[in-house]
Length: 167
Image (cartoon, rainbow, N blue to C red):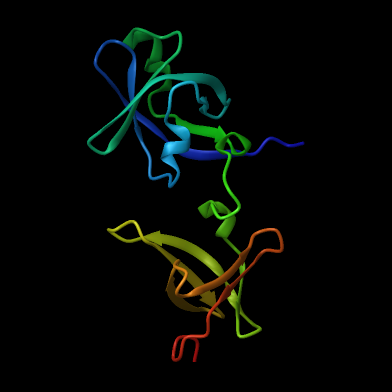
Protein backbone atom coordinates (compact mmCIF):
# COMPACT_ATOMS: atom_id res chain seq x y z
CA UNK A 1 0.00 0.00 0.00
CA UNK A 2 1.29 3.44 -0.92
CA UNK A 3 1.80 5.59 2.17
CA UNK A 4 -0.24 8.76 2.00
CA UNK A 5 1.27 11.81 3.66
CA UNK A 6 -0.76 14.85 4.70
CA UNK A 7 0.74 18.34 4.94
CA UNK A 8 0.18 19.84 8.39
CA UNK A 9 2.42 22.91 8.52
CA UNK A 10 5.81 24.53 8.05
CA UNK A 11 8.65 24.96 10.52
CA UNK A 12 9.15 28.70 10.31
CA UNK A 13 11.70 29.22 13.05
CA UNK A 14 13.36 27.98 16.19
CA UNK A 15 12.37 29.20 19.64
CA UNK A 16 14.85 29.52 22.45
CA UNK A 17 18.03 27.49 22.71
CA UNK A 18 16.68 24.10 23.84
CA UNK A 19 15.54 22.78 20.47
CA UNK A 20 11.95 24.02 20.26
CA UNK A 21 10.54 24.89 16.82
CA UNK A 22 7.65 27.08 15.67
CA UNK A 23 5.26 25.51 13.21
CA UNK A 24 2.81 27.64 11.26
CA UNK A 25 -0.24 25.47 10.62
CA UNK A 26 -3.84 25.94 9.54
CA UNK A 27 -4.47 22.19 9.59
CA UNK A 28 -8.01 21.55 10.75
CA UNK A 29 -7.29 18.53 12.99
CA UNK A 30 -4.36 19.92 14.97
CA UNK A 31 -5.47 18.06 18.09
CA UNK A 32 -4.79 14.77 16.29
CA UNK A 33 -1.28 15.82 15.20
CA UNK A 34 0.36 18.07 17.74
CA UNK A 35 0.72 15.86 20.77
CA UNK A 36 3.55 13.96 22.46
CA UNK A 37 4.59 10.64 20.85
CA UNK A 38 3.07 11.58 17.45
CA UNK A 39 5.33 10.65 14.54
CA UNK A 40 5.89 13.47 12.06
CA UNK A 41 7.80 13.57 8.79
CA UNK A 42 9.86 16.60 7.84
CA UNK A 43 10.97 17.94 4.48
CA UNK A 44 11.07 16.43 1.02
CA UNK A 45 12.93 13.37 2.34
CA UNK A 46 10.21 12.84 4.98
CA UNK A 47 12.69 12.51 7.85
CA UNK A 48 10.87 10.77 10.67
CA UNK A 49 10.78 12.43 14.08
CA UNK A 50 8.68 12.02 17.21
CA UNK A 51 7.07 14.93 19.06
CA UNK A 52 8.34 15.15 22.62
CA UNK A 53 6.48 18.24 23.90
CA UNK A 54 3.78 20.47 22.49
CA UNK A 55 2.25 23.83 23.35
CA UNK A 56 0.34 26.50 21.44
CA UNK A 57 1.88 29.98 21.49
CA UNK A 58 0.34 32.96 19.65
CA UNK A 59 -0.18 31.78 16.05
CA UNK A 60 2.23 28.87 16.32
CA UNK A 61 2.30 25.22 17.26
CA UNK A 62 5.46 24.82 19.35
CA UNK A 63 7.11 21.41 19.58
CA UNK A 64 10.28 19.75 20.69
CA UNK A 65 11.32 16.44 19.18
CA UNK A 66 12.72 13.37 20.93
CA UNK A 67 16.50 13.26 20.92
CA UNK A 68 17.02 17.00 20.43
CA UNK A 69 17.87 19.42 23.22
CA UNK A 70 19.82 22.13 21.47
CA UNK A 71 18.99 24.79 18.89
CA UNK A 72 21.98 23.80 16.74
CA UNK A 73 20.63 20.26 16.26
CA UNK A 74 17.29 21.41 14.83
CA UNK A 75 18.39 24.30 12.62
CA UNK A 76 18.45 21.84 9.69
CA UNK A 77 14.63 21.72 9.80
CA UNK A 78 14.02 25.48 9.63
CA UNK A 79 11.87 26.32 6.59
CA UNK A 80 10.81 22.73 5.91
CA UNK A 81 7.30 21.32 5.62
CA UNK A 82 5.84 18.93 8.19
CA UNK A 83 3.70 15.92 7.29
CA UNK A 84 1.96 13.04 9.01
CA UNK A 85 0.75 9.73 7.66
CA UNK A 86 -2.95 9.91 6.92
CA UNK A 87 -3.54 6.59 8.67
CA UNK A 88 -2.00 7.99 11.89
CA UNK A 89 -4.69 10.69 12.08
CA UNK A 90 -7.41 8.13 12.92
CA UNK A 91 -10.11 10.24 11.29
CA UNK A 92 -13.75 9.27 11.70
CA UNK A 93 -15.93 8.87 8.60
CA UNK A 94 -17.32 12.40 9.18
CA UNK A 95 -13.84 13.97 9.35
CA UNK A 96 -12.83 14.85 5.79
CA UNK A 97 -9.56 16.53 4.86
CA UNK A 98 -9.61 19.59 2.60
CA UNK A 99 -7.44 17.74 0.06
CA UNK A 100 -10.14 15.09 -0.23
CA UNK A 101 -12.75 17.73 -1.14
CA UNK A 102 -10.70 19.20 -3.97
CA UNK A 103 -11.98 18.38 -7.48
CA UNK A 104 -15.11 16.58 -6.25
CA UNK A 105 -17.98 16.73 -8.74
CA UNK A 106 -20.76 18.99 -7.52
CA UNK A 107 -24.28 17.64 -7.88
CA UNK A 108 -27.39 19.79 -7.40
CA UNK A 109 -30.86 18.26 -7.81
CA UNK A 110 -29.33 15.29 -9.64
CA UNK A 111 -27.42 17.42 -12.17
CA UNK A 112 -23.66 17.88 -12.35
CA UNK A 113 -22.84 21.55 -11.74
CA UNK A 114 -19.05 21.69 -11.89
CA UNK A 115 -16.36 20.77 -9.40
CA UNK A 116 -14.72 22.09 -6.23
CA UNK A 117 -11.85 24.29 -7.40
CA UNK A 118 -10.64 25.67 -4.09
CA UNK A 119 -11.40 25.85 -0.39
CA UNK A 120 -11.25 29.19 1.38
CA UNK A 121 -11.41 29.89 5.07
CA UNK A 122 -13.04 33.03 6.37
CA UNK A 123 -11.91 34.82 9.53
CA UNK A 124 -14.05 32.54 11.68
CA UNK A 125 -12.27 29.55 10.06
CA UNK A 126 -15.51 28.52 8.36
CA UNK A 127 -14.75 26.70 5.13
CA UNK A 128 -16.11 28.13 1.89
CA UNK A 129 -16.19 25.85 -1.17
CA UNK A 130 -15.23 27.57 -4.41
CA UNK A 131 -17.07 25.80 -7.21
CA UNK A 132 -16.26 26.15 -10.90
CA UNK A 133 -19.56 25.91 -12.78
CA UNK A 134 -18.45 26.13 -16.44
CA UNK A 135 -16.18 29.11 -15.76
CA UNK A 136 -18.56 30.77 -13.30
CA UNK A 137 -17.35 30.82 -9.68
CA UNK A 138 -19.89 29.96 -7.00
CA UNK A 139 -19.11 30.15 -3.27
CA UNK A 140 -20.93 27.90 -0.83
CA UNK A 141 -20.31 27.50 2.91
CA UNK A 142 -19.21 23.99 3.86
CA UNK A 143 -22.04 23.55 6.32
CA UNK A 144 -24.83 20.95 6.76
CA UNK A 145 -27.42 23.61 5.84
CA UNK A 146 -26.03 23.58 2.30
CA UNK A 147 -24.40 20.14 1.94
CA UNK A 148 -26.53 17.02 1.68
CA UNK A 149 -23.83 14.40 1.10
CA UNK A 150 -20.07 14.08 0.65
CA UNK A 151 -18.83 10.90 -0.98
CA UNK A 152 -15.05 10.97 -1.19
CA UNK A 153 -14.83 7.41 -2.47
CA UNK A 154 -17.13 8.10 -5.46
CA UNK A 155 -15.72 11.65 -5.80
CA UNK A 156 -18.87 13.75 -5.55
CA UNK A 157 -20.64 16.17 -3.23
CA UNK A 158 -24.37 16.83 -3.20
CA UNK A 159 -25.36 20.43 -2.53
CA UNK A 160 -28.92 21.25 -1.59
CA UNK A 161 -30.77 23.23 -4.27
CA UNK A 162 -30.74 26.86 -3.14
CA UNK A 163 -32.97 29.18 -5.10
CA UNK A 164 -30.96 31.63 -7.18
CA UNK A 165 -27.57 30.08 -6.53
CA UNK A 166 -27.00 28.13 -9.72
CA UNK A 167 -29.46 29.95 -12.00
